[in-house]
Length: 547
Image (cartoon, rainbow, N blue to C red):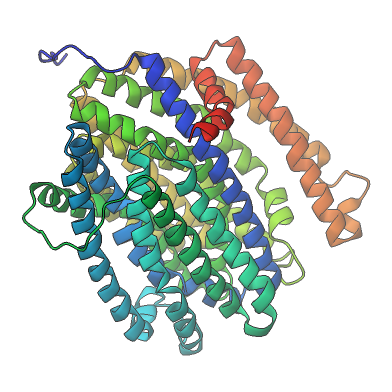
């Protein structure tokens, strides 16, 4: 066993206080992100109703591929992950003027860089779309170009908004940053409803641009100004704090972007499969993002400032306990969720997506992808906590090295599962889940060594209990689904509305019974992770008032 070096005594808050802080912040994030994800489901339903899951849906989704790639590489949380630890370090050492100087310099330089990249993407949209959708025929590429040019400018809003949100998170302000995506989804829905009949996919794209401007930039700017933002354009590249951010940034950007780039690689391979499978992957991934956003994103964003503070103070014991708590809590929430979404995939797709233009023939395509994606929910969620453990210690190199290796393994897996194994787009989803599990396992092993353990005994006990409770709930969920689907007085055979009523009833009843079984088993097994998760949700209203 590796011996632990001498450490200064911890002087931070007691762990119970840290748990309350994380639970409260997580509660705020969960409530706001839940609202955003519900709107996201409504958005996807509106898109499916207008565009179906064929040519128009493919070009609409492809229009976001180039902007998404830019977002993942520049603004997708990467800058915040590099900026927050440095900004926190300066604030915690009473150097507030320097902290705002760093903010101003990073915002000025990166805004110019992102602006240039957007201009390049706008000018060369045609060839870039052909590269990212190499299986598209010319007519599909031509239809995607104008839509991409509408969406691209939104990325400057996401970039600046990401920096502003990171600043608010450092000040323990979580509510306003979480509202941004809600407004963004509302913009897409309103744009589709008002303009979709006349402009087709372009109506949704204009709505996305408007939502990004209002929710992700203007609202966040107002909130940061309210807490005393001190900004003036700056090009002070030699400031020590700015240099530290630059050193952290590139590895962090790549490390956080790699899991998302994997989704884009999925779409690139799927472009060879004709009309439908590419949109099916995207639809399935969006459905899977619901629990990832509600649980993983909320927990990761809420826990990161605490991890950064503990790491900056050299409190390794607290850092270890907080990381362990975060991992065990996220496993408690996501392992059963992964199983439930696999069992209920068909009624979920029928309820949310199946419409006049999204037909019964389209549903199985999305269900297959969703079932394979669901396998990796727990791995994606744990990755979010593990990566931020490294970033809090200002080690951005290790996650990107591990992520790069995992991606190198992942790329040929796409081809193997899609073609030699003849699994089609389902194989692409399975390759993604396997890549996520490998990445998570490697991150866990390395971080465990860095922290001289992550309470391995408690982790193992928690994992066994979660597996047992999840197994019990899975049996209940499967039995109730089989009893309900197709047996609710013939509703699914009478009309589309009847199908949706039956699907909704199946989801609600099966989920409720599975949840009761899971919580009852967890209570019987005396799982402390249950109390942490319930505490987070109970504190969301109180914390929201405090925020």
